[in-house]
Length: 159
Image 1 (cartoon, rainbow, N blue to C red):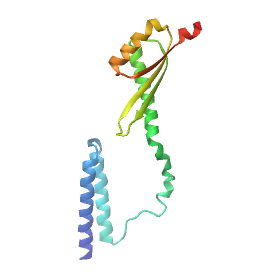
Image 2 (image 1 turned 90 degrees about the vertical axis):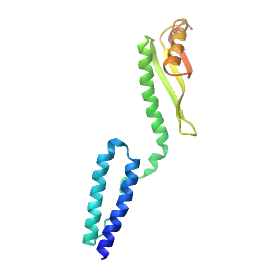
Image 3 (image 1 turned 90 degrees about the horizontal axis):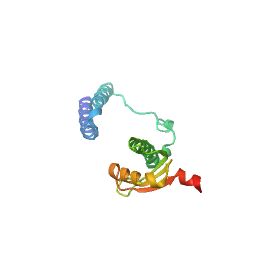
Image 4 (image 1 turned 60 degrees about the horizontal axis):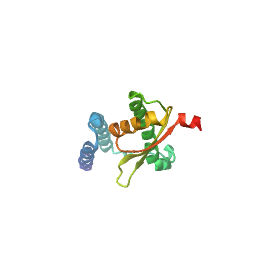
């Protein structure tokens, strides 16, 4: 009788876990999640039938090292986002025949966890008179109203 009780309890708990995971899992992982839950169900039923316990070794978590590296996850995300934005914005500016030598994008996460571009710094190989308005117009139309920090290499050579 205890075995049937354990099997029933295991199936109920796994069913609840499965429902929660199904709701939280993106569509592209639902099939994989079904396989994992099926495997866990089979292992749990087998453990109940055999009267054994399924558990992880005590130092299993310790073997994966220190998890403090994830404290700066926001910084890692922002750095990767800034690199991707730099490539994307550079391609937009190159499509418009703007001679950009160097680009730097500064992105931030606000208190509501929204990511936004706070500043774009550009070094342009050309004269301010020729490219400044075109760059500002392109950025405003294609990206948005963002703070621009423009440096022109032609002006630096003349000084």
